[in-house]
Structure formats: C-alpha cells, structure tokens
Length: 206
Image (tube, rainbow, N blue to C red; front, side, top):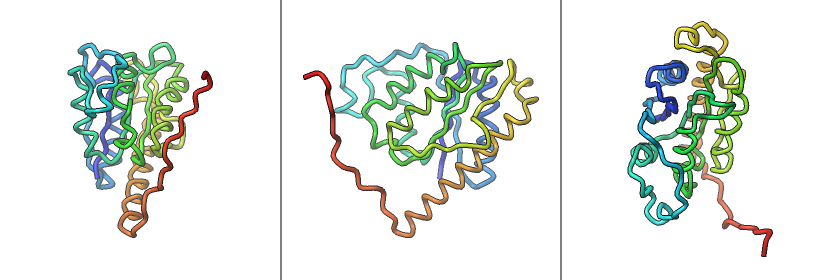
C-alpha cells in the first residue's frame, strides 16, 4: 500500500514538508510506502473549464497536475499539505487541486485522504476546512487525528518545537495506516465497495 503526500508549499524543504515527513515516518513504521510530491514553484494555471479532461482523463495544460494524476492512479491514500495564506490554502495548491479533482471522482473515490496545514499563527482551521471539501465531494474517507491537522512555526526549526503539532502528525499517520489496513482486510474478506446510484443533478434555474 502507498500513500502520496502532496507538498503545496513553494518551499521544498520548509514547514509543510517538515510536517509531512512526520506523517510519512509514522506510515512507514506501519509498513505503508510513501512518496512526497512537490507541487513546485512553476506557475500553476487555474481550471479553464474546457471540459477536455472529462474525455481524456488528463488536463490539456501540461504541468505537474498530470504528473500527479499518473501517480494518483497507483496510490491508496493521500495527504495534502499547505501553508496558510490569508486563512486559505496556497493559491498554487488550490489551482492544483481544482484541476486534479475535477471530473475524476472514480480516481479518488473510497481512498482515504487528509489535509494538513502549516501556519505561523492563525487561519489554519479555515484552510483545513477548504481542503477537506475536495474529499467530501469525492467519496473519500477523511482521516483525522487527536487535534486538527496543523503545525505552527515560521521556520522548519520552529515547527520542530511544536511538539503537540508533531504528535498530531504522527497520530494522523498511524490512523491512516490503520484505516488502509482495515480497508484492505475488508477487500480480502470479500467486502464490496458501496454500490453508487446514478448521479442526479438538480438545477434550480429552469
């Protein structure tokens, strides 16, 4: 089993990365393979609304989104991490997730996911809620921890002083490993995924 951890910070080895590493180490101790995917520093376009991905499964814009989608097909779970910018996830990660999730319900459905936030002081809960909404609309079980998934600090060294935050990350990793193993045990026992009804779309303006 493998969990893909997405670093939505422009800093490859910054505060968000420091938190993701704690989650990854806990997963590794439970025998779960991990990979940290760096969104990068190159510009990430927002969704163009062209609908081409609904036919091809890939975005017409050639950047890290398609690289992520190739990895996502083989992943069993996801952790999306972001710094807090104006009480929201980074603009780069927001554009990235808008395009990665659009029209790809079958790719993400029933794969556990978690959001983690890194902030100097405040705004983390609002950003945390924002990212979780991608999961709840995609039939993804959300993995929690002993506290909201956040660390505090302005530098990686300061994050390492947030002992409660680091413990929250480790607990998150252990909880995700437990859920992944439970899902795998259910599959081996013959438990089938929920049978989904055909989608119903309600438009309020006729």
